[in-house]
Length: 199
Length: 199
Image 1 (tube, chains in turn blue, purple):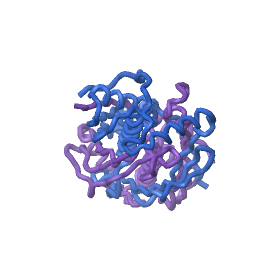
Image 2 (cartoon, chains in turn orange, green):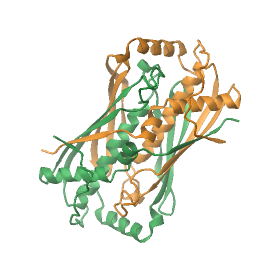
Image 3 (cartoon, helix red, strand yellow):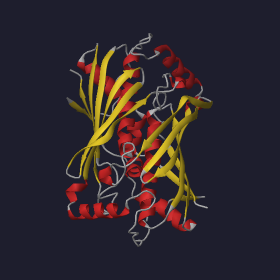
Image 4 (cartoon, rainbow over the protein chains, first blue to last red):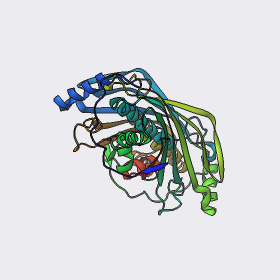
């Protein structure tokens, strides 16, 4: 077990030209090539719509996104409920919003691991992760102005098995971290603008 | 429509002692009182476990969390798939990880709006929101080191209706922003440590 703190991406690797790990590696390389040639294809807008239900329970729909020069519908509309648990005076109709952050982080890093392993010709046997985050609720409950509202820290623990030496598997995780959209958003922050129509 | 940029929480409001909006307001106030009296009750640890499926598809379970002096099981285990869409060389078995970030943000702000409205004696009729985020995929595709991996910006648009003047409804949204765990995590960033077991 070793905690990754380096921010230096690992050196360029030879590219495996065959599909691997369920990753269509040739199409992935072709996609990267197309975006290199035409940068506007890389501009994506993701969106969700949320509807309050009652109490702390709300429901989100994920249906379409813009990118690669057009609007794309997901194969089906995805719907997710979120709520607070009973100990936080909710009805537990879904996970808390902050648990969805942990899911997003694990899923992003894991997708990257699969892609990078395929690109480097490494067959994966297993990728498991646990993500934990600590929050002191005195922030959101308005009890202390010295306590932040969000997570104070998040820990991700990966267990990874594949047909490569330990060091190479570690480098794949590190490269995924260095190219993860959610890791970047969560560690470096994102400007958020909120507009309100209350008429 | 007005974009909220203030970071000053609104002034203290009189507290409505009755349940409202599906929020058990008396229990909410009692919970805040209990945490004020015993700060260690506020220390929560949330966790998720994720298992790679194939390609960019992974599955997360959300089952239990620690807080209020003990471990709590959710009423049921929640399971969520994430994937990349076909245009990004996935199989679209779930939303992208970055779409789950938008869901988490809307759900957190909306839960806060319901709680704060109840505490202030405002009956809500409707709370809807759309969240959009822009990403330039040249970051995660490794095409440009000058483009960040994560969202460049996120815009939330609320439509809120209730039995209060427009200004009071706006103040409720603003107070929710000022006390949102996900808004804080996403705008200010969180330290993330990654450990790897590759043996």
